[in-house]
Image (cartoon, rainbow, N blue to C red):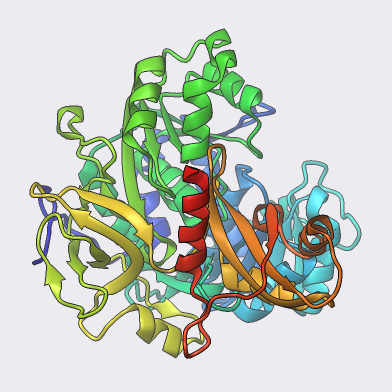
Length: 526
């Protein structure tokens, strides 16, 4: 059975993403497009469009051309949008990098992506320089107000000195890539997700069909722009709609509340841990959040109790969505009418999106209220994983269905519910943590004979990584955790260690994580 949403089909134009996003920019003129939350610095729509042209022209004179890859290693700043769209204008590809990654993780992504240039900020310059050297980056740029060269990095602001004459570039929206974010698989290191201009334009048209915000809204961009949720649902969709977007470099709760108040934010895209804090932390009462009308929550399921608690406290609508990096990202969303929202549901399929639930064993398509793997098909589905045809074939089948690896069901009204993850990724505050990566690190420890990592429920983070370790010598849990922490980004840290005699495995040697998860759940019940 194929499920579709109640929305009308949308028409998707065959144009590049920058042409699509800024088609009405001239009409918006001096309206603020982006505001740097901490400083209050404003970039208007006309300034943004002009800056994109100037930077694109400068990059072209430096030899950046169609098909080249540009790395962005930065927190949320207004210049992120300039860099992304200047690269897109030239037919280039942006690979967005998590600033919390270690030097080695950054270098791996840049090398794997084949990046030519990289831009960063002063606080990440040391590890950016290391990664740039390892990945043989041709030029390193830096977002810096001073406009001075810092340790060999070219000021990004110097790229604004051109006349803005961008060379003519022919872009095939369906074939040419524009974004290369990295998504954690269940095995090995993260993979480059190839997203075309058409993928991203299609998904914005689909989001437009969901009708949940307008040019009159002020958005807060607290979700990281290296993540597809922040990049597309907040930044690019916000600019397309003509809204004003307030960027926040990092999440700290009271400054976040202050920003919501100071800029009269009307729409906030969040993840469940932030919604939890909003619903429970007493300090919320010290701020005027009366302008906040809608919270859109994604990246992990939000339960009914938490949804109702947040709505009641803030007197605003809370909507959920579902998607993944491989789907540009949105595939499901709550209906626009609050009366049609079902609490605990991630919503209904977006326009132009087919969805089905299949039996994990037989692959048979299932009807309502039967749990199976969620599969989606539509114009927002990625082109594939970069240089990984086998991984692509294992995710997208011959009929174009993307197998999400998430377990869920649809009710009789076509509302979807996500109940588990077949792919075993750990969702820490919305970040994906692949157990296999942590297991490989644990096995590199001289005193570890075997290891398995599972998600452990956590009220604040959603899930945290827990390691089961078989020792071959002597080590404490703290030593094991410190060993891993020194080699991974903060969100990947192992938060607890349990020593056991043997890791449960199948006949083929595959770790049976579900048995460890079951053991952990039973212990929590006691």
